[in-house]
Amino acid sequence: MAETIYSDVVGRQNLSGAANYWSMVMELRPYLFQCGSAIFQEVPDSALFRLPAFAQQDVQNWMKHQFPSDFSVLKANAGSRVDLQRIQNQLLQLALEETQSLLASQSFQLAEVARR
Image (cartoon, rainbow, N blue to C red; front, side):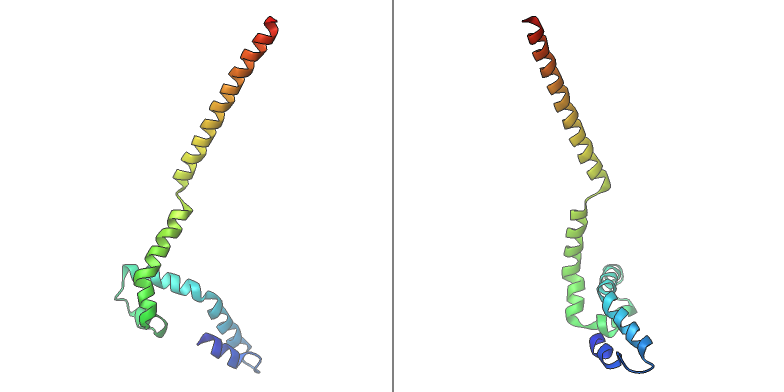
C-alpha cells in the first residue's frame, strides 16, 4: 500500500513532504514489524494489533510462530559477550601452552647442540 501511495504523490507539486514521508515508511517497514512482533510476544491483545498492517492473519501468524524462532536463532548466532570472552581466553590459554611447549622443546634442542 505504501508503494502505491508513494508512486501517486512522488513528483507532484506541493507533495514532496508526503513523498518523503512514504519513502521513509517503506524504508522503516521491516523495523516496524520487528518491533510490533516483539510487542506482540508480551502483549498480544494490545490495541496496536487492530491496525490494518498488523491485523492481517498472515502477519499475526508470522508474529506468533515464525518471529520467535527467527529471533532465537539470531540471538544464538550473536552469542554472549561472556561466552566470547571465555572462548578468547581459552584460545589464549591454548596458545600460551603451545608457546610454552615450543620453548621447552627449543631449550632441550639447544642444550643438545651445546653438549656436542
